[in-house]
Length: 298
Image 1 (tube, one colour):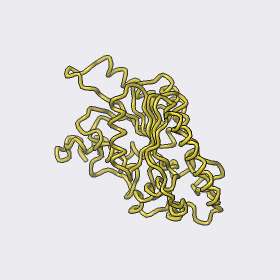
Image 2: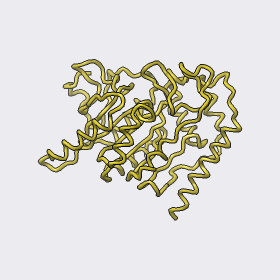
Image 3: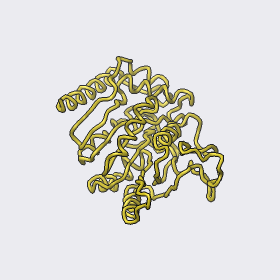
Image 4: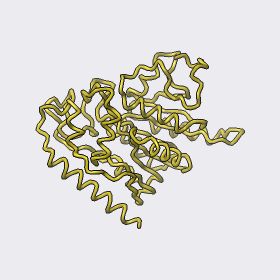
């Protein structure tokens, strides 16, 4: 866990052993896959209040292998904008790019951080923003966020959430950022391709990772990757990308898997009045809309 420990000096090892994350944490898997995609790249992380910053451990040790700046809950895009500006004013002698990456949960993205996120996107800051979406405020007890799906039980919605989930990708696409995409921890090749594609683009780039939280979702740790696979196959979590806010591309078509298989593995929905027919209808409608948007590029 010591920052100077050479044992974990692999360029792929972003999140090192000794971190404080829970077993089966979707965020941990996302960080591991991010490290692999960024192997041999130079980059730093800006992390607001969330499970991601707790994962570092206590000073003076860290479980991260790159420089990390801890920001206030609402301001990681603003902090990252400053880091990117300093990097531009002080270019490396070898001219190698230094990427600035925000790593934030849904609370610091959909809700508390929305103002600075929108502002950075509108200015087209040269940063990569990654939201690992566990659909709750996982670090503070599992309260509902605007990323929480309808009917999900949380500590603040014990009877199930009544509102639908916010469409964050479409909100960012409306800012006409150069690139926005969803990422799946069950699709490593697609994950790596999209990250490496983003490295070639200048300006604001946004990613959304579906990140199961066994503690908050009341799921088995071993099921996390399979849950994401089911979400993609059923269309609950579509894999797609958007270029310049207007060009949509679907990366994986649903294969007809019943969304019920995804919901049945999560006890946060147990006992709730989930209208699965309504879920299926909403999923079909969402995919139909994405296909229509993608067809406009042809």
